[in-house]
Image 1 (cartoon, rainbow, N blue to C red):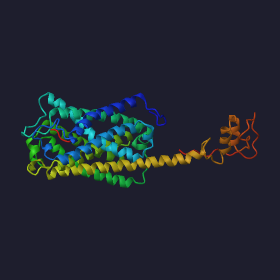
Image 2: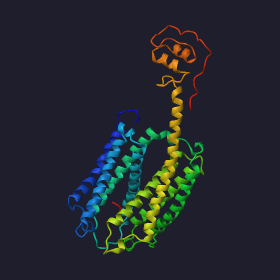
Image 3: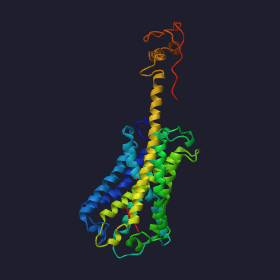
Image 4: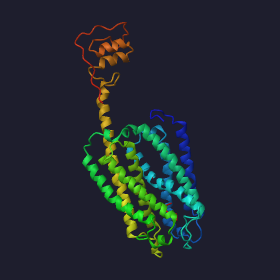
Length: 399
């Protein structure tokens, strides 16, 4: 999928279609709920208690999933190459954070369910019909795979030069000290967050809400273990990028660790905080997050944002350096729209249709032919030869 090609490849078109179709089940279900339908919501569910609040939340999630379709087109159409980088990166960062835990956790939970595990104790209060989770999370998984593939192709074509090479090849950074401070802060925050999630993954109930204690399940432990992995990945990515303790590590590997881990930690933690606010039940206070849970969510968001800052600073510097090199190199190229003094005559001769010998003579400092003439041989140089200018080098709850 070449950035200069107005037509996406067959693979890109297929992935775009898959991503769009995978959004339809979720969009249809949410639209039905906004319209007042109770399909998939059993009688007595707490989702039926706050119709206005849930309609607002459902409208927000409809817009979020519709944005996946917009992103799929942006990643495959020429106009998507002209969008400012931040307008592409930030939505995809959030999408990565929301979808990656699902694409990793849902298959693991399905496997556990095959062996009779996964489900927690039934508290007698329905939430959603089981088929809703299957349909919705399957759609999310397909969205994640299709959008992730498209994003990888997009990054390769638009920013591939920024993530090539190894850490040892990175030049000294003027903001290196600031990046290292941010990386240290990310590690300091990420480790306690990872510790809390690890304790819950291993079966501890300390710091969990009463509802989660009563609903302890293998599914919940899988979710917590995944958060541990994301916290460690985010911290590792930040340290590799800022401190470079393993210089032979590929830059793309370090960026991928920080991107995926930081996005998943920040977006999922933020979503869990939002979900706890909109489903607040004063009668059932045991459903509300405890202080340790809120600390884990807040710490996850802070860690993700710190890692994002490290990566964004580094890559923005590389992009700026590339533009500076291109600007310095551009005037020295034959055929440039604004040729340098040493190559302008040669470029004019070549542009006018003259033979290569004419261009060589003109670039060497000779008078050369008139731009409109096509002579058999160039005139002899009238002065000393001058060489060319040097070229510059990411449904929050289940079980």
